[in-house]
Image 1 (tube, one colour):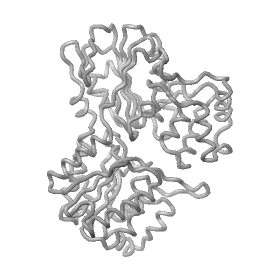
Image 2 (cartoon, helix red, strand yellow; image 1 turned 30 degrees about the vertical axis):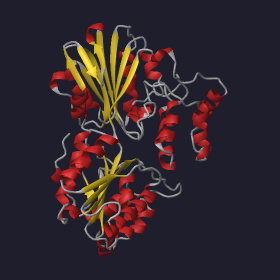
Image 3 (tube, rainbow, N blue to C red; image 1 turned 120 degrees about the vertical axis):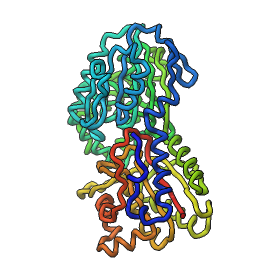
Image 4 (cartoon, rainbow, N blue to C red; image 1 turned 60 degrees about the vertical axis):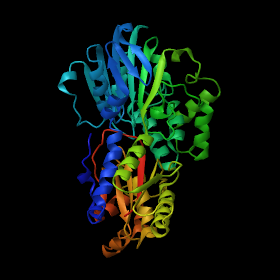
Length: 461
């Protein structure tokens, strides 16, 4: 989905001389990771040959070709790949977030579109997963399954292990999201509570050939972690899942059925997920199509074209969002006042994925990690002239909100005071959405149809 730059102009950007330039930079970052554009750039059909990053698949070798798309970008990815193999496609199954998307008419007879919830799995996702598995239960060694994975797949593609209920999964996910566990730690547990994650889908699809195409939403692009690696070898074990639970002292909170299963697996009472070298991966190929790096590169190129001095932080953004926000604010202040590391006009870029740890005893406000980064920066940006810190969730949905991020400037703190708003109070309640809503500085892109983590832009104009 193409995001018009003008739709990214919040009040602060409208009031900034270079606001339109900043909006074009954000739009360029999103355009670079649009699934349709990415697939057109990396996947080519020549006769009966499908060519991807030097790998050639001869479609004549397969009697049947199936397509399975999972995640927030599943529909766009599936349609783009479907167009390339439409003359050979047997059937396709798409599981994505939300119920408002529709299949193009040309695919309505051969593809089925399912909707589920994210970040907490629901019955819709569980039922859809069951249907997909039932439709792919009798594959042969001359069949090809093209699996498309994007952000949100871990929650959407849901098939609980025996003895684990959907309610157990929902509660476990809620606890993990609130405790401060990162995506890797969360997915280690998810893999051991599922019949499809951690390489188990690859095992289920045998003896067919499987090609997995991935839009990465995990920094570093570890294939086993993206979507919890349904077609990738799983290096983690039951012991690792229990280590995460112990680290965050969740033993008393996690459902008993979950603890019981993990302990049984630890004792050898349950089979492990398939590891590297397992025969089930013999006919499996996994490829990363695009990631956070692609978005950063496009933003950097657009910033240079707009006349900005530009650079990117060498390490990804990780850790507590509020801590990251304060660190970025200090970097922006130094850049604005001292010209380090870039002289004006400048655009310093960063990408990654932070966390927000919620207190167990209070009802949190409305927000997300990108909004929290922006909110925590406000006191340190106060009075800083011709500067802005902009956060952006590339899927267009920060946390459970409809905002992609927010714009924070040297004027934001003063404007809060004029409106009777206390940024520190909103931060303590993790209520960042409502504060930036009052400032008219929410980035409202709508669902972008992609997901490659988060971006942050430090501007001096």
